[in-house]
Length: 394
Image (tube, rainbow, N blue to C red; front, side, top):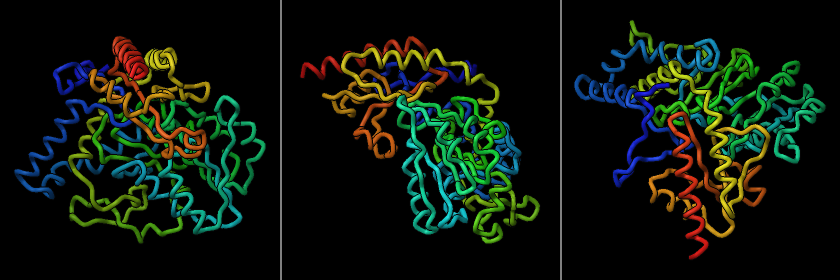
C-alpha cells in the first residue's frame, strides 16, 4: 500500500506529525509534489502555454481516464473543476425545474449545496423537502420508497458528510429512485478515496468530488461525473458555454458536448498534473481496507470522559466529530496541535439541517486515512484525555 508514500510529515518542533485531518486535506504524497514541481519548473523555463502543450496527453486524456476508472464511468462523462462545490454549481443551478417539481435533500446536505438549491427554488418555484431520519440518524428509506413519485424531480444525497462520519446508503437509494424520472446527485467529496464509489452501482446522474481530501491531490482540484441524460436536460445550451477543451493541432478551444463542455476555460496545469499523480497512486493501492482504523478512532473518542460523540447512523466512516460541554472546540484542537496532532474545528452551520438544528455550533473533527496507524490512534487518545483533564482542572 504505497509504502514509499505512507510516512507522515513532521510538525514544527521536529516531532513526527500525526495527521488526523484528511477530511480537510490529505497529506500530499511525494509523487504528487514532484509532478507539480516539474510543471512549475517547466513553466518558469519555457512558458505556461508551452508547458500546457508539453503535458497535453496528461491534461486532455490521461487524467480523465483515471478519474473515470475511479468512479466507474466513461471518460466523456467526467469534467474537471477547481473544487467540488464549483463542480456542483456548474450543474445544479441550471436544472430546468418548475413550481410543480419537488427536490429532496437529506439533513446531511452541505451548506454550499443548499445555497445553490435555495437559489434554484427562488428562481423556479420548486419545492424543497427534507428526507426524514430514523431515531438513530439513518435515512428513512421506507419513507423514501413510500413517497417517491414523478413529482420528485431532483434528489441530492451526501455520501459522507464533512461534519460527521455516517455513510449514507447511496446504492440503496439509487434502486428506490431508478423507476422514476428524477435526477439523482451524490456529493462524494468525503467518500471518494475513502470508501468504494461506483456511479453505475449507485445509479446517480451527478456525482461530485474533491481532489485534495482522501485522494491526497492538490487543493484547487475537483471533478464531476455528469450523465448524458442530465447534460441534455440542462437549461442552458452547451454551445453557449465557455469550454475547456483545446484542440492540440490548432490550439483553438472547441465546442464539446461531453461533460467537459461544463468546465471553466482556465485551469492550473500543475494542479491537474498533481491530481493525475494522486489518481495513479490511488489506482495502484488498496484504499478500502482500513475499517479497523475507523473503529479504533471512534472507540477512542467515545471512551474519553466527558466527550460527546456526534456519530449518527449504523454505518460509519473514518470521520469522527465530538464536543465537550465545558471546553471550546478550538481549545481542544490547539492542545492536540501542541502534541503534534492535527485535528480540526468544524462549525455547525456547514451542515445546518443536522448539526445546527441540534445545537451544535462547533465541534472537533478527527479523520483517518491509510497512512495512519493504530499506534497513532493510541497517541491521539492519550493526548485527548490529557487535554480534557487539563481543561477540566483549569
